[in-house]
Image (cartoon, rainbow, N blue to C red; front, side, top):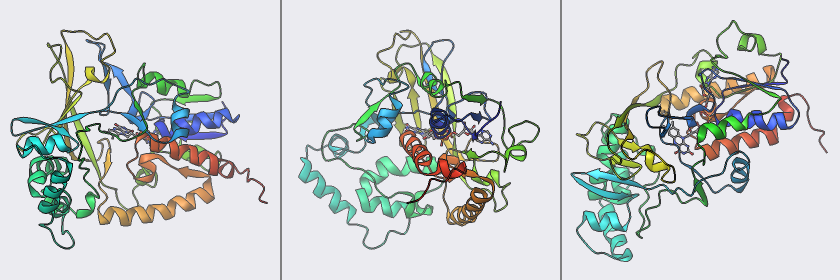
Length: 390
Ligand code: FDA
């Protein structure tokens, strides 16, 4: 097959670019390293129970971007799922994000919104001046008692680092709601794909002009769509890790990863909710997901359930990169890679994008919006069909 465009990576960024390019009449080859498409949004049915499990951690779709919402609805409908999370702390269960219910349960009080706001403001005033680390920043936002109860242990587990040794810049805000609203997301649209992520993602590239090559690593030689063969011959949209593309010449960028421990349990309902966070630092997992609760509308077995415990740690070579660590060293290295990205774009028609290509955490709707922008603004230029300027 001849290709007008090679897309490296079949996550939501790559799939959106491929789908849009094919719709504009281009022949597209999508090269994917894994044995399935869809990137980290992929899900599959647990074979014993038929319960849909998100293979790379819970994926909840939400957006306030109307263009993205209309776009995704071309490939799937969405359920009316609304995400809610609770936190287990010292043997009690509290609603999250921190709201009036959390505050009143924690302080054994019945405060109204204004009183609760005053209380938190008084407790937050303990930190005067610029916070020196994550702990001080969090206290300056929500006060010490709520920080120690709900943030300290969870954050220490996420980062395997005491929050006093993490930079203040790791958090910019900690939402506190002075109502009893415990919906996790504030977006206009929210839901889960009615017949699952795999069906949605597969439909995006169900097009005669799109050829998906699984188990094919663009950076390994020896196949017709490798970097060595394609570079400079066919335009490329690359959504893999930016440091790996350049053979780590400026050093590796830091990531956090997650380990997932999945179990089928012989009960119909294990925890009564899709996600429980564990705030205490003597509990090693950060949260437990129970996947049946993402689809209460489905006819799942009533005597078995699937739970996944999540553990967070720094990624080693070979681990899945999930969240950028973004230390000052990472930022320096990223700046050096960005210069190389510009040159690669000009010299070899390679555009970088997506979460790994930009070293940036992107929610699904952000990855899609960013891919649509690339197609709108850059695709013609990348293909050498520079639009006439007025
Ligand atoms: P993504 O990582 O999905 O895809 C990149 C693809 O490129 C991968 O399939 C990879 O195998 C492939 N690749 C890399 N190098 C390659 C090479 N050399 N050759 C060939 N292929 C290569 N979002 C949200 O909206 N709601 C949520 O609840 C969550 N939850 C969530 C949990 C966790 C744990 C993570 C890590 C992420 C989320 N997300 C999320 C974010 C969501 O996963 C993210 O928006 C998409 O993964 C972004 O899609 P990309 O295409 O950018 O990357």
